[in-house]
Image 1 (tube, rainbow, N blue to C red):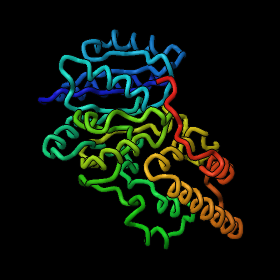
Image 2 (cartoon, helix red, strand yellow):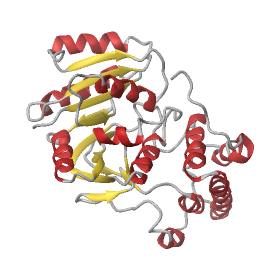
Image 3 (cartoon, rainbow, N blue to C red):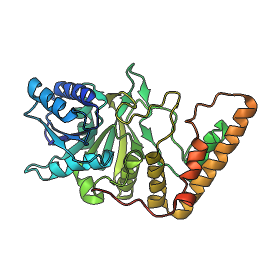
Image 4 (tube, rainbow, N blue to C red):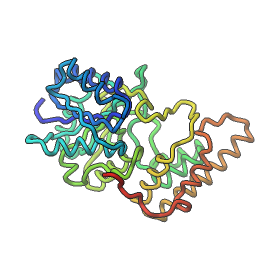
Length: 326
């Protein structure tokens, strides 16, 4: 396939998964030429050495490079380290493929994304169909979060979801390529010109919301984002972040709330961010009351209401988080 492709994998204490991901890419590379940069985000667990040894042992060193970021600055930070490295190359890639370490690509996953984008010059970002280990498709194409989506998330009422369908995330996973607001950063192809127009990923997000924020900037620049199910990628959910969806037994970490607050303040302003907090807190409080009265099981993370209040813009302030250790 013509056109240079730069694949980026950010590793943090997931050496075995990263090696498995590379093994799947080695098969994909037979039909689609690309180079890979792995950024070790200061794992300090021997990941750098283990991955380096595997690359040499498997003979991947002609197309795989591993770098040490020197600092665990999060998802955006780690990806930007590799993006900047690729941009300094004599031959700069036409496409940049962000891929989670806890993934395995199916045959054609990379090639199909690039082919789709070649056919549609207006597309700045394209994402894959994300599947679990059994092959079941997971939601990986979404609408931008707004105060309306927070209203829906808080109240969790079927009637309300239907009324807000136009503005909240779709429940149906499409079998055909569709334009969407944003796609999962676990498998995201980005055209080089996007970085020239909107810049790199926002490093003030440690983890979560960064790909949504990035796709929002792409949208505002007049470029399109598409979901391309012909590109299939298995995602071992929660392995790289440590947060799994099943049963939600752990509290949501502070950095998730920091990212959420930054997203609303940065992109929609103070008033919108305040409303987003208020409608979620109000809605979720009524949901909790209904749940108690109906004696239903609560599958939300522990202390969600308390943590949302304590991390609201009203209590945490209206200033954006600064970029640390860039």
